[in-house]
Length: 502
Image (cartoon, rainbow, N blue to C red; front, side, top):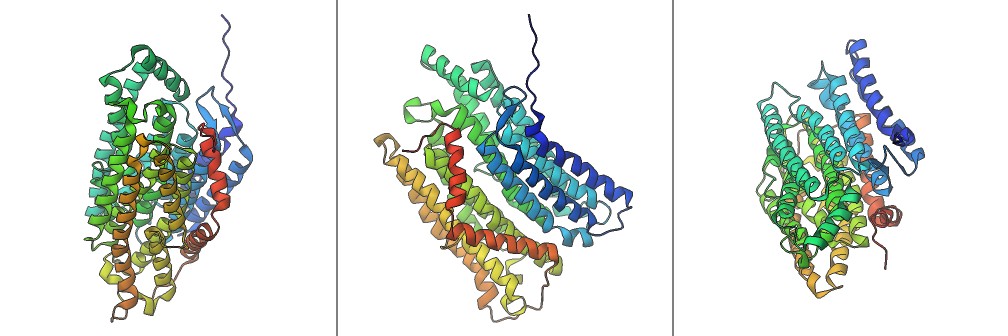
């Protein structure tokens, strides 16, 4: 019997290989220079991300390692999000690396790069085990980064909670994957879709095994996405983590979870979406979790006095909106999810960058400490107001277009058949809870602009921090006023998943 090696096609993996090696260079450089420079490792990391982005633009589409590694429109789109969120997180970190992280700057930046490599591998994975490995490579560096302030009790608590819950969710995910392998006889996602369909047609009802696997995989990925009831870790971890890492968690890690969900459910388990597949219908189950996310995230955020905890609950609500596009299951659905993730990156990373800048100057994270900030630091206050209004979905900012597209995708599916009319209720909950969100976003703006006090803090921007804030502002306005180019790019994702535009 002839044995043929798979086509490795390493050219497609050049961005991941380069960034992995560059992370080692950053760590080595910091050690060799005896950590004398406060910012060299950070600038070196930013340079590596820019070079990786340049390499990514030339790799093109294709597959490698047999059918394990796919470079397709979805992988390319989300790799841009991963690189962008890492770039903005590192740009926001120069303040803490000068003040609080003196002896381990290289390790700090290197771990962010390693986590980004994991996200990029996950985006190109077309096989369950390699997808799981990519998800773990994404998460394990974040366990360390969450507790990087080892002398701070909140940071240590955040790391321990994130590690324990993350390990538990990984166990649930791999257990669910093992059931899918047992039912389909393969870990290749495309072949799994075919085998499960054949098995279902043959035996009519696969039974509780598929239902159990669906629940386990949703639970495992739900922890990564902070979908209720798997969200309890989020506010404590965001509060205790270094602020740039909380930002990276809220965008990069969640985007990786969205990719994993889309590959397993929208692609691999697409045949088990509709209500006719009860009890194996994952559509209504995920929609229920999305409703919980929007209600819990937006209502609990109202009561928060710490801005990092408020943004944590905001991120839970935002995932609920994103999942509306995911369960729409049409050509606009995945495009809207990708666009939402892209727009969310600019608004949320920008908001966290402002929080990081203010915290570096004052050491405070209470919302009340922002009182009168518009008088002493008008640019910082104006930037924060723009980012919060975008998260609330106010036109003409990116957040408005993001919500419009996910709602439009769900309404389109709801109008296509009577069995999908329940999606109207999902959109209704989304619109109603979006109104609730205005309260807690506007509360921060009220403190900055309408407080009688004058803030005693005059905050100056460092060059990297100013770059991150400006990048966020440009993205928020540009995507809100001219979203068509990004939506055209995102529409290729739907086509690669087999959704044909009507």
